[in-house]
Amino acid sequence: MNVIFLGPPGAGKGTQAVRVCERLGIPQISTGDILRAAMKAETPVGLEAKSYVEKGLLVPDSVVINIVRDRLQQDDCKNGYILDGFPRTVAQAEALSAFADIQAVVDIEVADDVLVNRLSGRRVCPACGATYHTANLAGREDCEKCGAKLIRRKDDEPETVLSRLTVYHDQTAPLIAYYTEKGILHAIDGTQPMEECTKAVLAVLDADK
Image (cartoon, rainbow, N blue to C red):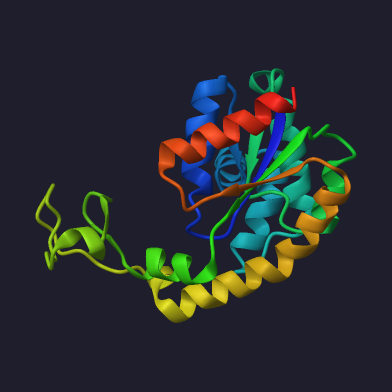
């Protein structure tokens, strides 16, 4: 089954994509990951992407689309995949439709105020990468695994979170309408417990088979 996962920063989209992929035995295709892999492998489109990145420029849609197309042609995608982080715009969605038959789009919904609390309260260990939330730290400021002092990433500053959400809504609102019109969009409550959210996603995907 070929699926797209949508969801704002902090909605748990990536976590759910991993869990659902494990249950279904299909790969998670993250555009960030495949972009880095293509650049590292120095494929033709990877080298093209690298030329933009090295200049500090955004990789154009045409290059990202070609990298996604190459990835979806690999053997592990024959039985389906979950696209995580692509498409981000209607233009990308229209380009994707030329070479991929998307059967379902899962939109993990979480209100902005909940997301700001989730992300701005997140603390990360710079040494081992462990992630915590201030709600569960009881005032603790060091990593329980390695003892390093926890930090809040710049991406998780409240002002930055709000900016990221604004960009997401501006880009994704038309995308949600696009897939709703096609009758393949399924909204999932991203505030429910992790396992319940996974069950809800699997339920809608099973119904679409």
